[in-house]
Length: 204
Image 1 (tube, rainbow, N blue to C red):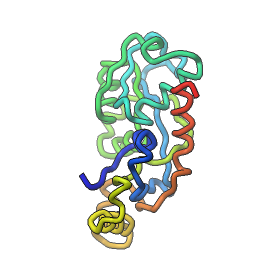
Image 2: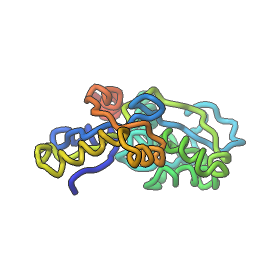
Image 3: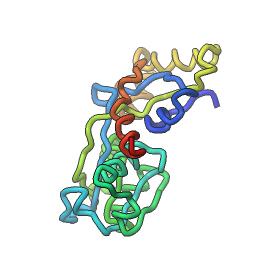
Image 4: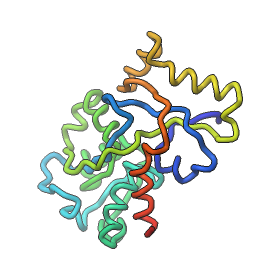
């Protein structure tokens, strides 16, 4: 493929092979948070309260859906498999919410942007969950292409189209459907917080 909308975690994992096409702007900034969620009636108020329960992650290569919680546990010398009674990967942030809302798992790690978007699109689903922990603000999932193809006309055209979405009526409508404000060029410094969490998880 020529381009992809990926997560900051795999972007940094493959930094030598990928380059930024743009970074989405959500609610006025190119940042988002990871949410730790539980069922609406769950008494938990912190990660430490969830020891021994089942937990849903979205993807092992997700920042908000895995890395944030895993690195928080790593700071205490623990792994998800040690801390939780059972860990599942749903391979979709909406599925994490469904897992917690439906009682399949006690808790879940989810993209805050996705949870907020679902709150508008499927309020009955998110109403069965609640957010107990919000991470620090981290670089929003970027749009990327292979570094060795950045000068190709098709990739340059893709980048121009993404960065110009907010300047046209059709582009603005597309952004509205995604609950985004714009796509901006972005810079690697946005992902320093994710890089720091990668270092924690790897013991660096």
